[in-house]
Length: 223
Length: 171
Image 1: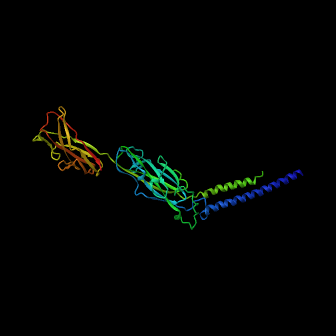
Image 2 (image 1 turned 90 degrees about the horizontal axis):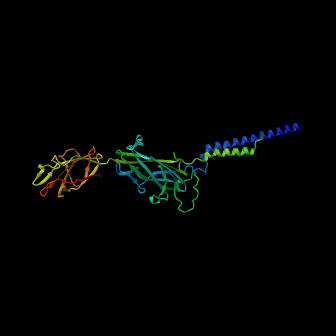
Image 3 (image 1 turned 180 degrees about the vertical axis):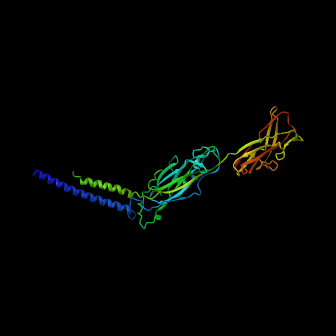
């Protein structure tokens, strides 16, 4: 009798367990379905956690490149390009949103830009990058905020348009077919400048590169 | 063993939330731009003396010692080396004192300087004390001859010392 009761109880528990497992499997399969569904159709939904099709446009305001001009004689030491003479890049985007900027630059300019000359004291000159941004709605180096640059790598996060002592504006409208980004756009400005140190190097043209990466929210990860 | 349905549900929801994390991480792609940094480095200008001025007795006429930098082979000769086809400026002090090392008597020497992009003394042209219209040749060279004149009518016996200073810079 006792055995029958135990067996009955055991069968009952097994039945409950099997039923429970079935329910769990059903729930799991349903949730997996939703995951796959969202993965394939996210573009057709309004995701308030994503920036959707908001765009950023980068435009060179300065002509040419960041050039240290004038006669630079071999062995003449330091030549400086100050903020007022900086190379300017315009960052155009949704004014309510923050942008993250990552700047990386070569630490040396190489004769004829030839990588073989890297580290050669006669065919390379050191370059120290400095950077700043202005987000007051107009291009003005007087509004510049400096960006910390260490070993020619620097990053910053700032709103396209500074809030200027006002509370944050309304959240941007989610991207829909009726959304016109140009109606909520503004521009901030990135300033690139710095100095070179010319040792007793061979005469010629020395070049290097500065790479700028901009996205909404946090700066891109440093490479 | 009975597995708690509640625990399984919680576990499943957690798995679900982790999997949708990747869906909501679709932010806009970074915009990238690369700009070039450049500097044009020129070699320093170097000046080499190829021949010093040789004052000879035969160059004296009517008590005036004169060395013509265009025709006299005794004229001093220098060559300046720098960036090819690059403009430069030559400046020098035309009148200098020569001092007798024994008596401190002073004579005034007037320097006359000519220059040429070719190593040809005869076709060299007169250079004024502050000439800004000169260019290195395609090899980066410019030749300079130095002569001048001094009145010896008041000269005293002995040696006279003096300097000739010339400056060359890119423009």
